[in-house]
Image (cartoon, rainbow over all chains, first blue to last red; front, side, top):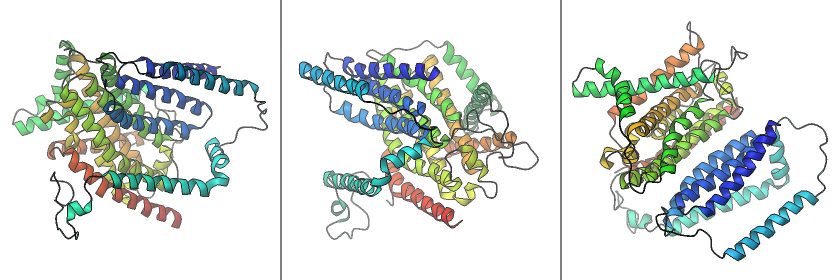
Length: 187
Length: 309
């Protein structure tokens, strides 16, 4: 009973704060409404007994949204909500897509013949979930992880305006790097 | 754990203890200030109480165009984050809640301080606050990864994310001895987490107080109390993670926990007065070039030790 109440509150809260993202006219408020939505979505994981995943979602989402807020505010013309601004574009199209997606997902929930539970829940659901998702695909997952990491490093290297040749000279022999701002390691 | 079936710590006791430690940190800080200024050190012990009373009756100042909702949310979030993080910190052998993922919970709750400081800075609609909020984010990105690796290394040594198991794994040798680099990284990142001492640039004097420039009256009181609570909680967490929890001769476990917490807290407060503020851009390089590789190496060494054991 208590679980049902918590789930309903979190489900409604997640949808409501998701709607709030597009209703508020301040980018900072939109960011934190989105964060609230993510946090509400983490609670059902805890209800499923996936405590590690649930708490991890809270941790990652808070950190991620605090980085996101920098970019969301940087790219918006009205970050503080001081001027009237609509957070939605292409209203009709977006509404149609959203309604159709919702209808398809809801129909899936109602129409799929869900299997009845056999046996009891495992002792460590997080481990079971990980094996179910990753077990046969561990190699793929590790490769994807390496590719993602390499992509991040490469994009940082490509986008940095000053590389090691700017800092240490063409033959990399300068004893002290030539930086616009002094300080840091070794100087 | 010796008394594994002891009744859990009550929430009220925990909050009172965190409050007392936070007050002690504030009083200790005032005492060091008084000594440096040459005024009577004993009178400094009442400074936090007098300052609280002053802030309670001070009229709230408002700023035109402030985002009051986010501003108040930020202020309230700081003590709440500290209290939530404290839930998994054991006193002796009992915690309010010894979660199976206690270390992750602690980290998730203290990261709420990022939200709190940024919201405080943003909500005030003041340039000082805004710069302070962004300073805390860049500082967070510099200390958070080494901090997480320090926490993970302690969990790795015990083979468990449960704080009680980590304490139990230190019956032979304390993790501060087994993994000194992780302990040092934890202390540095603990200072940065509570934006204290060398990491107080988000509320720095060069910014007229930064994120704490605009809050007045009770808002400021909540902000300052939250900051000292956070400092007390990160100091208290160092005890079960690295200093053997309540282990010690003669005295009961809870007394040892409190004693060690007071020592770590005293050390952090003292460092805050001895070390000048470190600039963001300098610390960023130190964080990524020194602390991160150091904590990774420490994790590697501990992993090998665990495998060889």
